[in-house]
Image (cartoon, rainbow, N blue to C red; front, side, top):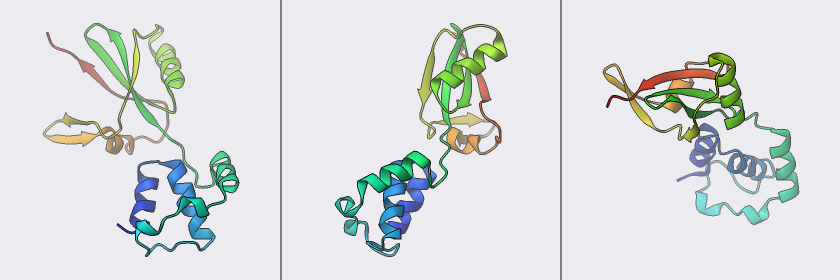
Amino acid sequence: MFVEELYLDSIRFEESSLAHYIHHLLTEQKISLDDNISKLDFDQADHQKVAEMIQTNVLGFHKICIYSLKMNPKEFVFIFAANEHEAIQFYIKTFQQTPLNCHEYTLDYQLSRGNDVISFRDMRKEFTIFPAIAMYFKRES
């Protein structure tokens, strides 16, 4: 695997720390995009500088996660939000009640939608404003 592939994956999967470290090493010309990832040596990075880059969000990450909030024993709503607190507050504002629980799911979780399969990561691309309701789920029993 090459540095370019890892860098693009770190951005795609919102691995902020890894992306900022690679960005820093590229900027300092300690590595190139064409290098094999075996050439990555994070000890060559200025850790203080990278910490500041992450803090100021130089690469512009705006991480959005997916949360399952239990409405009642059989019904759930999935909400895209920046964090658990934001998901719960959005739920309370929307439904005027407190959820029974709230759990984060992986964005790579795949589910059926019609005749297709879609991940929450791909579904998130359909939204421009967050927090947002992604879907409802009713458990049959």
